[in-house]
Amino acid sequence: MKTKILEILRQADREAFISGQELCGQLGVSRTAVWKSIKQLKEAGYQIEAIQNKGYRLLAAPDILSKSEIESRLQTRWVGRPIHYYHELDSTNNEAKRMAEEKPGLQGHGAVIVAESQNAGRGRRGRGWDSPQGSGIFFTILLKPGMDPANAPMLTLVKALAAAKGIQKSTGLDAAIKWPNDVVVGGRKVVGILTEMSAQVDYVNHIVVGTGINVHQTSFPEELASKATSLDIELGQAKKQVLRAALLAAVLEEFEHYYEAFMQTQDLSALREEYNALLVNCGRQVRVLDPLGEFEGKALGINERGELLVEREGGAVKVSSGEVSVRGIYGYV
Image (cartoon, rainbow, N blue to C red; front, top):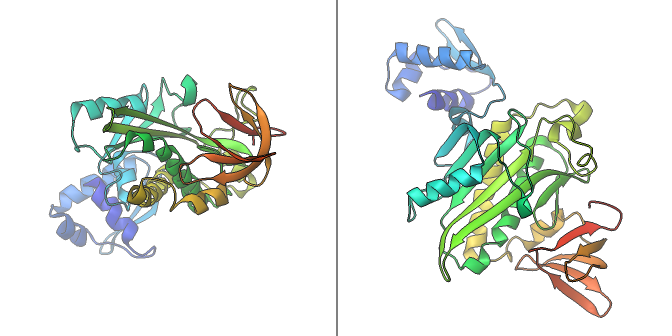
């Protein structure tokens, strides 16, 4: 009921009050039940004005990632339906995989697992991802798509595009993408994405797309300071408050849009132009760190398979992600 009350109050005009009787009618509950839910929301940190003979009005919301707060902001059709919220997990990817194995078939497709903190968060190539309470957004989308397993890695790029767009729309920051799936602001990383798949030779059992967004961190360890940043750091003097639930809802809405476009062709042909427009290295010299041998060239953008095209003497070469990393000539980007 708290979710529905928040939805109704948010949909109302900023200056409008919603009467208790109207809430009772829409929710099909008693005035006492409405009052109890309003009281619980206030105790959770919501500023709700209550005036006799007028009703209720939402003035401000706290920066929390509760199930009710996220769902009351969500405008998707199937992504995040439902939201599974946990105060702490080992990792949201691990929980999503456990959930997928417990519910085989299409059940669970689109579910989102969110944790306030992780004690075993992971990034690409087994790297740890620091996930302290209250600092960021740590979530995983569970997918059970009918697709060729060979096409699944492209979902990582789809998620990077959604994350960058969601950050842009929510904060106004100039978020960009460092190929293939790091989202950067001011040349430093704010989003990491880890996609994992369970599949047979020609069939996908499930895919989990995990994401960590640095939001409220004010500093980073010395070894990360030149590569990592947070939205609060980048907003700096703007002092704009980032409400994590609102940002998460925006990213999930963007993902639903881009995922559906991707599934039409199961490649990036429909998203390639938008992705390349955000690609921070596009048109610049890069260093390709390939275990088979490093080389330099000019990044031309991705093709429809998500491979990075790099111009060298003799023509362009295709670079697949895998164990390959791409960096700018003079630094991280």
